[in-house]
Image (cartoon, rainbow, N blue to C red; front, side):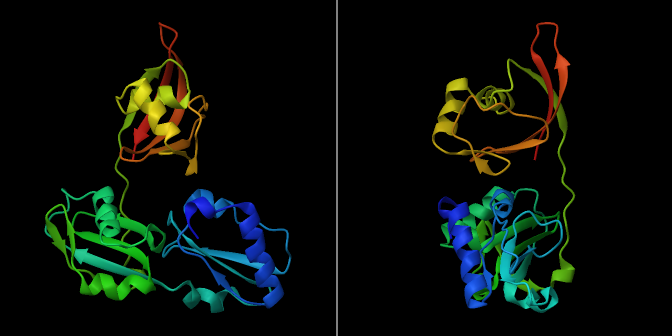
Length: 247
């Protein structure tokens, strides 16, 4: 199910199918917004999310009848982990790895979290593409990555490194915020928003006038993700002083 197909009504239909046929439904990877849509008042159906490790951002959901035990469902997620080692990953970014995977014909929906440390790249994936990744080295920024399968207990969660920054904005409108933190024109930020390339807390936002609040994550395709940590106050010129971080 692709992102554009996600809706409460479609999820309701899936839940009803699981309840009626006493079956198990397994999704592809979902972002946090898509995960939030999975709620139901159907007492016969439960949900279980898993992304390879507890803190995973992208997760798969299993919808199953409430009479089944969750412990028996772990293998049904059909997830695997692959790892590639290199002397130095300083020149490789998350965006480059993801771009190379998609360029090789791999659908975003079967790719979970991409974890990059100083010497390793680990990717949680659907098991359906495990053989392809192992047999086909990945070219990322002129680096050839040869993947091998590892266990979930070998996942190394990277420490997120980001500097807190403060700046002033004329307002907390989405277009004004993006213009300032990305150092682009207001018109450019409005164009990104109207083209559906901007997400707030992983939910697509199409209105430039959307007003941000603290702790919201803003993602602009091609520019990365920014978190608005807090509003500090007003400057001497009566502009809004904000604290944010680029992730």
